[in-house]
Length: 579
Image (cartoon, rainbow, N blue to C red; front, side):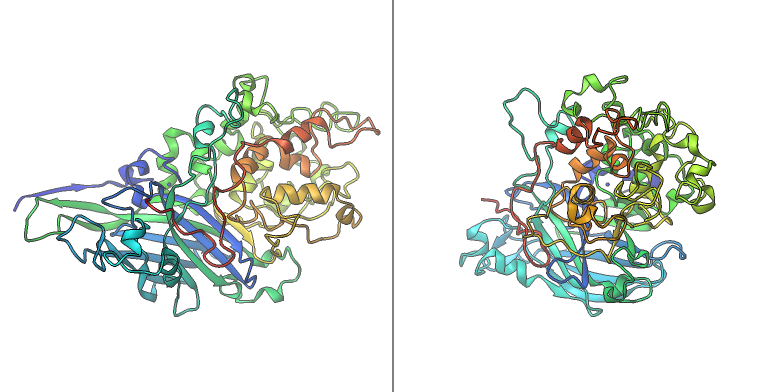
Protein backbone atom coordinates (compact mmCIF):
# COMPACT_ATOMS: atom_id res chain seq x y z
CA UNK A 1 0.00 0.00 0.00
CA UNK A 2 1.30 3.46 -0.83
CA UNK A 3 0.79 6.41 1.45
CA UNK A 4 0.67 10.13 0.78
CA UNK A 5 0.95 12.22 3.94
CA UNK A 6 0.93 15.95 4.31
CA UNK A 7 0.66 18.42 7.15
CA UNK A 8 -2.02 21.10 7.11
CA UNK A 9 -0.12 23.84 8.89
CA UNK A 10 -1.99 26.24 11.11
CA UNK A 11 -1.18 29.00 8.65
CA UNK A 12 -2.95 27.16 5.86
CA UNK A 13 -6.16 26.03 7.52
CA UNK A 14 -7.12 29.20 9.33
CA UNK A 15 -10.52 29.98 8.34
CA UNK A 16 -15.62 31.37 8.77
CA UNK A 17 -19.78 32.74 7.36
CA UNK A 18 -21.07 32.18 3.83
CA UNK A 19 -17.79 31.48 1.97
CA UNK A 20 -16.33 34.76 3.22
CA UNK A 21 -12.70 33.77 3.76
CA UNK A 22 -10.41 32.33 1.06
CA UNK A 23 -9.32 29.15 2.84
CA UNK A 24 -12.60 28.13 4.45
CA UNK A 25 -14.34 28.53 1.09
CA UNK A 26 -12.54 25.29 0.17
CA UNK A 27 -13.77 23.48 3.30
CA UNK A 28 -17.55 23.97 3.38
CA UNK A 29 -18.26 21.23 5.94
CA UNK A 30 -16.34 23.25 8.55
CA UNK A 31 -17.62 26.66 7.47
CA UNK A 32 -19.67 28.59 10.07
CA UNK A 33 -22.40 30.39 8.16
CA UNK A 34 -24.47 32.07 10.90
CA UNK A 35 -24.97 32.31 14.64
CA UNK A 36 -28.11 33.28 16.56
CA UNK A 37 -28.80 33.72 20.28
CA UNK A 38 -32.15 34.85 21.70
CA UNK A 39 -34.57 34.27 24.54
CA UNK A 40 -36.93 31.57 23.36
CA UNK A 41 -40.21 33.29 22.43
CA UNK A 42 -42.39 30.38 23.61
CA UNK A 43 -40.22 29.51 26.64
CA UNK A 44 -38.65 32.75 27.94
CA UNK A 45 -36.92 30.99 30.83
CA UNK A 46 -34.54 29.57 28.23
CA UNK A 47 -32.13 30.87 25.62
CA UNK A 48 -31.86 29.32 22.16
CA UNK A 49 -28.50 29.27 20.40
CA UNK A 50 -28.33 28.28 16.74
CA UNK A 51 -25.03 27.70 14.96
CA UNK A 52 -25.26 26.99 11.24
CA UNK A 53 -22.63 25.38 9.06
CA UNK A 54 -22.18 24.60 5.33
CA UNK A 55 -23.15 27.46 3.01
CA UNK A 56 -25.59 27.44 0.08
CA UNK A 57 -26.67 23.81 0.12
CA UNK A 58 -28.50 23.08 -3.14
CA UNK A 59 -31.39 20.80 -2.07
CA UNK A 60 -31.14 18.65 -5.19
CA UNK A 61 -27.39 18.21 -4.90
CA UNK A 62 -27.24 14.42 -5.29
CA UNK A 63 -26.02 11.79 -5.37
CA UNK A 64 -23.83 12.91 -2.43
CA UNK A 65 -25.94 15.15 -0.27
CA UNK A 66 -24.61 17.65 2.25
CA UNK A 67 -23.95 16.48 5.78
CA UNK A 68 -21.95 17.38 8.86
CA UNK A 69 -18.31 16.36 8.55
CA UNK A 70 -16.51 13.66 10.46
CA UNK A 71 -13.22 14.54 12.15
CA UNK A 72 -14.48 18.06 12.83
CA UNK A 73 -15.16 19.53 16.24
CA UNK A 74 -18.17 21.84 16.03
CA UNK A 75 -18.32 23.97 19.17
CA UNK A 76 -20.59 26.60 20.74
CA UNK A 77 -18.81 28.79 23.28
CA UNK A 78 -20.42 30.89 26.03
CA UNK A 79 -18.70 33.54 28.14
CA UNK A 80 -20.74 34.82 31.08
CA UNK A 81 -18.29 36.27 33.60
CA UNK A 82 -15.91 39.18 33.08
CA UNK A 83 -13.81 38.00 36.03
CA UNK A 84 -12.92 34.64 34.42
CA UNK A 85 -10.81 34.27 31.27
CA UNK A 86 -12.07 32.31 28.29
CA UNK A 87 -15.18 30.13 27.96
CA UNK A 88 -17.41 29.47 30.94
CA UNK A 89 -19.67 26.96 29.16
CA UNK A 90 -18.74 25.10 25.96
CA UNK A 91 -20.68 22.55 23.92
CA UNK A 92 -18.89 20.22 21.50
CA UNK A 93 -20.52 18.17 18.76
CA UNK A 94 -18.80 15.42 16.78
CA UNK A 95 -20.47 13.41 14.02
CA UNK A 96 -20.16 9.87 12.67
CA UNK A 97 -21.46 8.44 9.39
CA UNK A 98 -22.23 4.96 8.13
CA UNK A 99 -23.24 3.59 4.73
CA UNK A 100 -26.07 1.18 5.47
CA UNK A 101 -26.18 -0.10 1.88
CA UNK A 102 -22.92 0.59 0.02
CA UNK A 103 -24.08 -1.51 -2.96
CA UNK A 104 -26.30 1.28 -4.33
CA UNK A 105 -25.60 4.75 -5.71
CA UNK A 106 -28.82 6.06 -4.16
CA UNK A 107 -28.64 7.89 -0.84
CA UNK A 108 -31.79 6.17 0.43
CA UNK A 109 -33.23 2.84 -0.76
CA UNK A 110 -35.44 0.14 0.77
CA UNK A 111 -35.30 1.52 4.29
CA UNK A 112 -31.53 1.96 4.34
CA UNK A 113 -29.77 5.28 4.50
CA UNK A 114 -26.27 5.98 3.24
CA UNK A 115 -24.24 8.61 5.02
CA UNK A 116 -26.53 7.99 7.96
CA UNK A 117 -25.27 10.44 10.56
CA UNK A 118 -25.31 10.43 14.35
CA UNK A 119 -23.62 12.70 16.87
CA UNK A 120 -22.12 12.95 20.31
CA UNK A 121 -22.66 16.07 22.40
CA UNK A 122 -20.22 17.01 25.15
CA UNK A 123 -20.18 19.86 27.66
CA UNK A 124 -17.37 21.64 29.50
CA UNK A 125 -17.73 24.17 32.31
CA UNK A 126 -14.01 24.65 32.99
CA UNK A 127 -12.77 26.24 29.79
CA UNK A 128 -12.35 22.95 27.95
CA UNK A 129 -10.09 21.28 30.50
CA UNK A 130 -12.58 18.45 31.01
CA UNK A 131 -15.59 17.24 29.06
CA UNK A 132 -18.75 15.32 29.96
CA UNK A 133 -20.79 13.44 27.37
CA UNK A 134 -24.38 14.58 27.74
CA UNK A 135 -25.91 12.97 24.63
CA UNK A 136 -24.80 9.92 22.65
CA UNK A 137 -26.04 8.55 19.33
CA UNK A 138 -28.07 11.65 18.60
CA UNK A 139 -30.13 11.34 15.41
CA UNK A 140 -29.42 13.54 12.39
CA UNK A 141 -32.30 13.36 9.91
CA UNK A 142 -31.38 12.61 6.29
CA UNK A 143 -31.40 15.11 3.48
CA UNK A 144 -34.90 15.96 2.26
CA UNK A 145 -34.25 14.26 -1.07
CA UNK A 146 -37.84 13.93 -2.27
CA UNK A 147 -41.11 12.10 -1.66
CA UNK A 148 -39.99 8.75 -3.08
CA UNK A 149 -36.88 8.64 -0.93
CA UNK A 150 -38.59 9.87 2.23
CA UNK A 151 -42.16 8.60 2.13
CA UNK A 152 -42.53 5.74 -0.34
CA UNK A 153 -42.16 2.06 0.39
CA UNK A 154 -39.01 1.87 -1.73
CA UNK A 155 -37.50 4.66 0.37
CA UNK A 156 -37.64 5.21 4.13
CA UNK A 157 -41.39 4.81 4.34
CA UNK A 158 -41.69 7.78 6.70
CA UNK A 159 -44.99 9.59 7.23
CA UNK A 160 -43.44 12.81 5.96
CA UNK A 161 -40.23 14.78 6.36
CA UNK A 162 -41.72 16.86 9.17
CA UNK A 163 -41.97 13.70 11.27
CA UNK A 164 -38.28 12.90 10.73
CA UNK A 165 -37.38 16.49 11.61
CA UNK A 166 -39.39 16.59 14.85
CA UNK A 167 -38.28 13.10 15.92
CA UNK A 168 -34.66 14.23 15.70
CA UNK A 169 -35.19 16.75 18.52
CA UNK A 170 -33.61 15.29 21.65
CA UNK A 171 -32.85 16.19 25.27
CA UNK A 172 -29.37 16.01 26.77
CA UNK A 173 -28.79 14.47 30.19
CA UNK A 174 -28.07 17.95 31.56
CA UNK A 175 -31.42 19.31 30.33
CA UNK A 176 -30.59 21.06 27.05
CA UNK A 177 -33.00 20.48 24.15
CA UNK A 178 -31.06 19.76 20.95
CA UNK A 179 -31.53 19.57 17.18
CA UNK A 180 -28.75 18.75 14.74
CA UNK A 181 -29.60 18.43 11.08
CA UNK A 182 -30.49 20.07 7.78
CA UNK A 183 -32.75 23.12 7.73
CA UNK A 184 -33.76 26.02 5.55
CA UNK A 185 -31.02 28.63 5.62
CA UNK A 186 -32.66 31.38 7.71
CA UNK A 187 -30.28 34.14 6.59
CA UNK A 188 -31.65 36.54 4.00
CA UNK A 189 -29.61 38.96 1.94
CA UNK A 190 -29.11 40.06 -1.65
CA UNK A 191 -25.65 38.50 -1.90
CA UNK A 192 -25.37 39.29 -5.58
CA UNK A 193 -26.11 42.97 -5.01
CA UNK A 194 -24.06 43.51 -1.84
CA UNK A 195 -20.87 42.05 -3.28
CA UNK A 196 -21.31 43.75 -6.65
CA UNK A 197 -19.55 46.78 -5.17
CA UNK A 198 -22.39 47.60 -2.78
CA UNK A 199 -25.29 47.49 -5.26
CA UNK A 200 -27.98 47.03 -2.60
CA UNK A 201 -30.67 47.97 -3.18
CA UNK A 202 -29.95 47.18 -6.82
CA UNK A 203 -29.92 50.22 -9.04
CA UNK A 204 -31.60 50.64 -12.43
CA UNK A 205 -33.09 47.16 -12.68
CA UNK A 206 -36.78 47.81 -12.24
CA UNK A 207 -36.77 47.21 -8.51
CA UNK A 208 -35.91 43.53 -8.78
CA UNK A 209 -34.06 42.16 -5.75
CA UNK A 210 -33.02 38.62 -4.97
CA UNK A 211 -32.49 36.82 -1.69
CA UNK A 212 -29.29 35.04 -2.61
CA UNK A 213 -30.06 32.21 -0.17
CA UNK A 214 -33.70 31.66 -1.07
CA UNK A 215 -34.40 27.96 -1.54
CA UNK A 216 -31.05 26.87 -0.12
CA UNK A 217 -30.42 24.79 2.99
CA UNK A 218 -27.79 24.71 5.69
CA UNK A 219 -26.91 22.39 8.59
CA UNK A 220 -28.09 23.55 12.00
CA UNK A 221 -26.90 22.86 15.52
CA UNK A 222 -29.58 24.28 17.83
CA UNK A 223 -29.64 24.10 21.61
CA UNK A 224 -32.18 25.46 24.07
CA UNK A 225 -30.66 26.07 27.49
CA UNK A 226 -32.26 27.24 30.77
CA UNK A 227 -31.14 30.78 31.56
CA UNK A 228 -30.00 29.62 35.01
CA UNK A 229 -27.51 27.27 33.31
CA UNK A 230 -25.95 30.17 31.42
CA UNK A 231 -26.12 32.90 34.07
CA UNK A 232 -22.78 33.21 35.85
CA UNK A 233 -24.18 32.54 39.34
CA UNK A 234 -26.74 29.95 38.27
CA UNK A 235 -29.66 32.31 38.84
CA UNK A 236 -32.96 32.16 36.93
CA UNK A 237 -34.12 35.24 35.06
CA UNK A 238 -36.75 35.90 37.76
CA UNK A 239 -33.89 37.04 40.03
CA UNK A 240 -32.68 39.78 37.67
CA UNK A 241 -32.56 43.22 39.32
CA UNK A 242 -34.13 44.79 36.23
CA UNK A 243 -34.49 44.11 32.51
CA UNK A 244 -30.96 45.39 31.80
CA UNK A 245 -29.20 43.59 34.67
CA UNK A 246 -25.54 43.32 33.66
CA UNK A 247 -25.15 40.04 35.53
CA UNK A 248 -27.24 38.35 32.81
CA UNK A 249 -25.02 39.22 29.86
CA UNK A 250 -23.49 36.35 27.89
CA UNK A 251 -21.14 36.34 24.93
CA UNK A 252 -21.63 33.57 22.36
CA UNK A 253 -19.42 32.41 19.51
CA UNK A 254 -19.16 29.25 17.44
CA UNK A 255 -16.23 27.49 15.83
CA UNK A 256 -15.08 24.47 13.88
CA UNK A 257 -11.71 22.76 14.29
CA UNK A 258 -9.79 20.12 12.34
CA UNK A 259 -6.70 18.11 13.13
CA UNK A 260 -3.47 19.43 11.69
CA UNK A 261 -2.41 16.29 9.77
CA UNK A 262 -4.42 14.47 7.13
CA UNK A 263 -3.23 11.27 5.46
CA UNK A 264 -4.58 10.01 2.13
CA UNK A 265 -4.27 6.31 1.34
CA UNK A 266 -4.42 4.75 -2.09
CA UNK A 267 -7.74 3.05 -2.81
CA UNK A 268 -8.12 -0.51 -1.61
CA UNK A 269 -11.28 -2.37 -2.61
CA UNK A 270 -11.60 -4.30 0.62
CA UNK A 271 -11.09 -1.21 2.82
CA UNK A 272 -13.90 1.11 1.80
CA UNK A 273 -14.05 4.32 3.79
CA UNK A 274 -10.47 4.14 5.08
CA UNK A 275 -8.90 6.40 2.49
CA UNK A 276 -8.43 9.39 4.78
CA UNK A 277 -7.28 9.62 8.38
CA UNK A 278 -6.63 12.66 10.56
CA UNK A 279 -4.20 13.09 13.41
CA UNK A 280 -2.17 15.57 15.49
CA UNK A 281 -3.35 18.68 17.33
CA UNK A 282 -6.69 20.36 16.72
CA UNK A 283 -6.62 23.66 14.82
CA UNK A 284 -9.47 26.17 14.69
CA UNK A 285 -10.40 26.64 11.04
CA UNK A 286 -13.58 28.68 11.36
CA UNK A 287 -15.34 30.94 13.86
CA UNK A 288 -18.30 33.26 14.02
CA UNK A 289 -19.74 35.71 16.52
CA UNK A 290 -21.25 38.90 15.16
CA UNK A 291 -22.71 38.44 11.68
CA UNK A 292 -20.83 39.83 8.69
CA UNK A 293 -17.66 40.73 10.62
CA UNK A 294 -15.35 38.69 8.44
CA UNK A 295 -17.46 39.18 5.33
CA UNK A 296 -17.79 42.95 5.33
CA UNK A 297 -15.37 44.42 7.89
CA UNK A 298 -12.16 42.38 7.68
CA UNK A 299 -10.27 42.79 4.35
CA UNK A 300 -9.39 39.81 2.17
CA UNK A 301 -5.76 39.70 3.23
CA UNK A 302 -6.67 39.29 6.91
CA UNK A 303 -9.74 37.04 6.74
CA UNK A 304 -7.92 33.74 7.26
CA UNK A 305 -5.98 35.25 10.15
CA UNK A 306 -9.20 36.45 11.78
CA UNK A 307 -10.66 32.95 11.61
CA UNK A 308 -7.60 31.39 13.25
CA UNK A 309 -7.72 33.44 16.45
CA UNK A 310 -10.32 33.42 19.22
CA UNK A 311 -12.30 36.36 20.62
CA UNK A 312 -10.08 36.18 23.69
CA UNK A 313 -6.97 36.61 21.55
CA UNK A 314 -8.43 39.91 20.37
CA UNK A 315 -8.07 41.44 23.82
CA UNK A 316 -4.31 41.79 23.37
CA UNK A 317 -4.03 41.31 19.59
CA UNK A 318 -4.78 44.77 18.21
CA UNK A 319 -3.84 44.02 14.60
CA UNK A 320 -7.46 44.09 13.44
CA UNK A 321 -8.70 47.02 15.52
CA UNK A 322 -8.23 49.59 12.78
CA UNK A 323 -10.84 47.96 10.55
CA UNK A 324 -13.48 48.79 13.18
CA UNK A 325 -12.15 52.25 14.03
CA UNK A 326 -12.19 53.17 10.31
CA UNK A 327 -14.34 50.62 8.44
CA UNK A 328 -13.97 50.41 4.68
CA UNK A 329 -17.74 50.61 4.19
CA UNK A 330 -17.69 54.10 5.69
CA UNK A 331 -15.61 55.29 2.71
CA UNK A 332 -18.63 54.66 0.50
CA UNK A 333 -20.92 56.70 2.74
CA UNK A 334 -18.86 59.89 2.49
CA UNK A 335 -19.16 62.20 -0.51
CA UNK A 336 -15.70 63.60 0.19
CA UNK A 337 -14.22 60.15 -0.34
CA UNK A 338 -15.95 57.44 -2.45
CA UNK A 339 -19.62 58.00 -1.69
CA UNK A 340 -20.42 58.95 -5.27
CA UNK A 341 -19.14 55.60 -6.51
CA UNK A 342 -21.81 53.62 -4.61
CA UNK A 343 -25.20 55.16 -5.45
CA UNK A 344 -27.10 52.44 -3.57
CA UNK A 345 -25.73 53.87 -0.32
CA UNK A 346 -26.85 57.43 -1.13
CA UNK A 347 -29.14 57.54 1.90
CA UNK A 348 -26.34 56.54 4.26
CA UNK A 349 -24.17 59.52 5.14
CA UNK A 350 -22.00 59.65 8.25
CA UNK A 351 -21.93 62.67 10.55
CA UNK A 352 -18.99 65.00 9.89
CA UNK A 353 -20.41 68.08 11.61
CA UNK A 354 -22.64 66.60 14.30
CA UNK A 355 -24.05 69.12 16.80
CA UNK A 356 -22.50 72.11 15.09
CA UNK A 357 -23.47 75.37 16.73
CA UNK A 358 -22.44 77.68 19.51
CA UNK A 359 -21.99 74.86 22.07
CA UNK A 360 -19.76 72.51 20.09
CA UNK A 361 -18.47 74.82 17.36
CA UNK A 362 -17.81 72.96 14.11
CA UNK A 363 -19.25 69.78 15.59
CA UNK A 364 -17.93 66.23 15.65
CA UNK A 365 -16.59 64.39 12.60
CA UNK A 366 -16.96 60.58 12.44
CA UNK A 367 -15.82 60.01 8.86
CA UNK A 368 -12.80 57.82 8.08
CA UNK A 369 -9.60 59.28 9.53
CA UNK A 370 -11.35 61.94 11.62
CA UNK A 371 -11.17 62.20 15.41
CA UNK A 372 -14.80 61.61 16.41
CA UNK A 373 -15.07 62.41 20.12
CA UNK A 374 -11.34 62.09 20.81
CA UNK A 375 -11.04 65.86 21.29
CA UNK A 376 -13.06 65.48 24.50
CA UNK A 377 -10.67 62.93 26.00
CA UNK A 378 -9.66 63.87 29.53
CA UNK A 379 -12.06 66.81 29.65
CA UNK A 380 -14.68 67.57 32.29
CA UNK A 381 -17.34 66.88 29.65
CA UNK A 382 -16.68 63.12 29.68
CA UNK A 383 -15.96 62.78 33.40
CA UNK A 384 -17.92 59.87 34.84
CA UNK A 385 -19.03 58.60 31.45
CA UNK A 386 -17.89 55.46 29.65
CA UNK A 387 -15.44 57.69 27.75
CA UNK A 388 -13.62 58.63 30.97
CA UNK A 389 -10.28 56.80 31.31
CA UNK A 390 -11.10 56.34 35.00
CA UNK A 391 -14.17 54.27 34.07
CA UNK A 392 -13.09 51.96 31.22
CA UNK A 393 -9.52 53.08 30.57
CA UNK A 394 -8.79 54.07 26.99
CA UNK A 395 -11.02 51.31 25.62
CA UNK A 396 -13.48 53.63 23.87
CA UNK A 397 -11.24 56.65 23.10
CA UNK A 398 -7.93 54.90 22.32
CA UNK A 399 -6.34 57.48 20.01
CA UNK A 400 -6.85 60.25 17.50
CA UNK A 401 -7.98 59.16 14.05
CA UNK A 402 -10.19 56.35 15.38
CA UNK A 403 -13.66 57.92 15.04
CA UNK A 404 -15.76 54.75 15.31
CA UNK A 405 -14.13 53.57 18.53
CA UNK A 406 -17.15 55.03 20.34
CA UNK A 407 -19.90 53.17 18.44
CA UNK A 408 -18.88 50.38 16.04
CA UNK A 409 -16.06 49.18 18.26
CA UNK A 410 -18.22 48.51 21.37
CA UNK A 411 -21.05 47.08 19.27
CA UNK A 412 -18.70 44.44 17.82
CA UNK A 413 -16.05 44.00 20.50
CA UNK A 414 -17.20 44.79 24.02
CA UNK A 415 -20.95 45.12 23.98
CA UNK A 416 -22.63 48.39 24.92
CA UNK A 417 -22.82 49.45 28.60
CA UNK A 418 -25.79 51.18 30.21
CA UNK A 419 -23.54 54.12 31.06
CA UNK A 420 -23.46 57.64 29.65
CA UNK A 421 -23.29 58.36 26.73
CA UNK A 422 -24.76 54.98 25.64
CA UNK A 423 -28.37 55.87 26.38
CA UNK A 424 -31.04 57.30 24.15
CA UNK A 425 -31.20 61.06 23.61
CA UNK A 426 -34.57 61.03 25.40
CA UNK A 427 -34.10 63.07 28.58
CA UNK A 428 -30.62 64.40 27.67
CA UNK A 429 -31.85 67.93 26.83
CA UNK A 430 -29.41 68.33 23.96
CA UNK A 431 -26.28 67.06 25.72
CA UNK A 432 -25.32 63.66 24.25
CA UNK A 433 -23.05 62.97 27.24
CA UNK A 434 -25.85 63.36 29.81
CA UNK A 435 -28.02 60.62 31.29
CA UNK A 436 -30.71 59.44 28.90
CA UNK A 437 -33.23 56.63 28.53
CA UNK A 438 -31.56 53.18 28.83
CA UNK A 439 -32.21 50.82 25.94
CA UNK A 440 -29.28 48.40 25.83
CA UNK A 441 -26.79 46.84 28.22
CA UNK A 442 -24.82 43.89 26.89
CA UNK A 443 -21.37 44.98 28.01
CA UNK A 444 -18.91 42.08 28.43
CA UNK A 445 -15.39 43.38 27.71
CA UNK A 446 -13.28 40.27 28.32
CA UNK A 447 -13.41 39.06 24.73
CA UNK A 448 -13.50 40.40 21.21
CA UNK A 449 -16.02 39.56 18.51
CA UNK A 450 -18.91 37.69 20.12
CA UNK A 451 -22.68 37.83 19.86
CA UNK A 452 -23.63 39.42 23.19
CA UNK A 453 -27.05 38.93 24.71
CA UNK A 454 -28.59 40.32 27.89
CA UNK A 455 -30.82 37.43 28.94
CA UNK A 456 -32.86 39.66 31.27
CA UNK A 457 -34.38 41.67 28.41
CA UNK A 458 -38.00 40.57 27.83
CA UNK A 459 -39.05 38.78 24.66
CA UNK A 460 -40.94 40.76 22.03
CA UNK A 461 -43.85 38.62 20.89
CA UNK A 462 -43.42 37.71 17.24
CA UNK A 463 -47.12 38.48 16.68
CA UNK A 464 -46.91 41.90 18.34
CA UNK A 465 -47.64 44.63 15.76
CA UNK A 466 -44.60 46.45 17.18
CA UNK A 467 -42.26 43.52 16.42
CA UNK A 468 -39.62 44.65 13.93
CA UNK A 469 -36.77 42.98 12.09
CA UNK A 470 -34.80 46.19 12.64
CA UNK A 471 -34.06 45.15 16.21
CA UNK A 472 -32.44 47.66 18.53
CA UNK A 473 -32.68 50.41 15.92
CA UNK A 474 -36.47 50.16 16.02
CA UNK A 475 -36.36 50.09 19.82
CA UNK A 476 -34.36 53.31 19.68
CA UNK A 477 -36.87 54.91 17.31
CA UNK A 478 -39.72 54.08 19.69
CA UNK A 479 -37.75 55.28 22.71
CA UNK A 480 -37.07 58.60 20.97
CA UNK A 481 -40.49 59.25 19.43
CA UNK A 482 -43.27 57.23 21.08
CA UNK A 483 -45.01 59.31 23.80
CA UNK A 484 -45.42 56.13 25.88
CA UNK A 485 -41.66 56.01 26.43
CA UNK A 486 -40.66 59.64 25.91
CA UNK A 487 -43.04 60.64 28.70
CA UNK A 488 -41.10 58.47 31.16
CA UNK A 489 -37.90 60.41 30.59
CA UNK A 490 -34.78 58.53 31.68
CA UNK A 491 -36.61 55.61 33.33
CA UNK A 492 -36.01 52.05 32.12
CA UNK A 493 -38.95 51.01 29.97
CA UNK A 494 -39.67 47.71 28.27
CA UNK A 495 -39.53 48.93 24.69
CA UNK A 496 -40.39 46.41 21.94
CA UNK A 497 -37.36 44.95 20.14
CA UNK A 498 -34.86 45.65 22.90
CA UNK A 499 -34.27 41.89 22.56
CA UNK A 500 -33.22 42.33 18.91
CA UNK A 501 -29.85 42.55 17.20
CA UNK A 502 -27.23 43.57 18.26
CA UNK A 503 -28.55 42.51 21.67
CA UNK A 504 -28.28 38.89 20.64
CA UNK A 505 -29.72 37.97 17.27
CA UNK A 506 -33.19 36.69 16.45
CA UNK A 507 -33.85 34.69 13.28
CA UNK A 508 -36.03 37.52 11.98
CA UNK A 509 -33.47 40.30 12.47
CA UNK A 510 -32.34 42.03 9.26
CA UNK A 511 -28.70 42.18 10.29
CA UNK A 512 -27.39 43.40 6.92
CA UNK A 513 -29.64 46.45 7.02
CA UNK A 514 -28.94 47.11 10.71
CA UNK A 515 -25.16 46.92 10.30
CA UNK A 516 -25.14 49.18 7.23
CA UNK A 517 -27.31 51.70 9.10
CA UNK A 518 -24.90 51.47 12.03
CA UNK A 519 -21.91 52.18 9.78
CA UNK A 520 -23.97 55.10 8.50
CA UNK A 521 -24.01 56.58 12.01
CA UNK A 522 -27.49 55.71 13.22
CA UNK A 523 -26.28 54.55 16.65
CA UNK A 524 -24.52 57.88 17.12
CA UNK A 525 -27.75 59.68 16.28
CA UNK A 526 -29.72 57.53 18.73
CA UNK A 527 -27.65 58.78 21.66
CA UNK A 528 -27.92 62.41 20.55
CA UNK A 529 -25.06 62.92 18.10
CA UNK A 530 -27.44 64.04 15.38
CA UNK A 531 -26.80 64.33 11.65
CA UNK A 532 -25.22 67.33 9.95
CA UNK A 533 -28.49 68.87 8.77
CA UNK A 534 -29.46 69.57 12.38
CA UNK A 535 -28.09 72.72 14.01
CA UNK A 536 -28.21 73.01 17.78
CA UNK A 537 -28.72 76.78 17.57
CA UNK A 538 -32.02 76.37 15.70
CA UNK A 539 -34.47 75.70 18.50
CA UNK A 540 -37.33 75.21 16.04
CA UNK A 541 -35.68 72.31 14.20
CA UNK A 542 -36.34 68.67 14.99
CA UNK A 543 -33.31 66.39 15.30
CA UNK A 544 -35.32 63.89 13.25
CA UNK A 545 -33.84 65.52 10.17
CA UNK A 546 -33.88 64.46 6.52
CA UNK A 547 -30.53 62.71 6.84
CA UNK A 548 -31.71 60.68 9.83
CA UNK A 549 -34.92 59.76 8.01
CA UNK A 550 -32.90 58.69 4.98
CA UNK A 551 -30.82 56.32 7.11
CA UNK A 552 -33.87 54.90 8.87
CA UNK A 553 -35.62 54.33 5.55
CA UNK A 554 -32.62 52.63 3.96
CA UNK A 555 -33.19 49.03 2.91
CA UNK A 556 -31.18 46.52 0.92
CA UNK A 557 -34.46 45.40 -0.66
CA UNK A 558 -34.48 41.99 1.04
CA UNK A 559 -36.03 42.33 4.50
CA UNK A 560 -37.29 38.85 5.39
CA UNK A 561 -36.59 35.18 4.94
CA UNK A 562 -38.02 33.35 1.96
CA UNK A 563 -40.11 31.10 4.21
CA UNK A 564 -41.63 31.23 7.67
CA UNK A 565 -40.01 30.37 10.99
CA UNK A 566 -41.37 27.77 13.37
CA UNK A 567 -43.19 28.90 16.52
CA UNK A 568 -41.28 26.42 18.69
CA UNK A 569 -37.80 24.92 18.96
CA UNK A 570 -35.67 24.74 16.87
CA UNK A 571 -37.50 27.65 15.14
CA UNK A 572 -35.70 27.08 11.81
CA UNK A 573 -37.82 25.50 9.11
CA UNK A 574 -37.52 22.06 7.56
CA UNK A 575 -35.03 21.91 4.69
CA UNK A 576 -36.17 22.45 1.14
CA UNK A 577 -36.87 19.28 -0.82
CA UNK A 578 -34.56 18.20 -3.61
CA UNK A 579 -37.62 18.03 -5.83
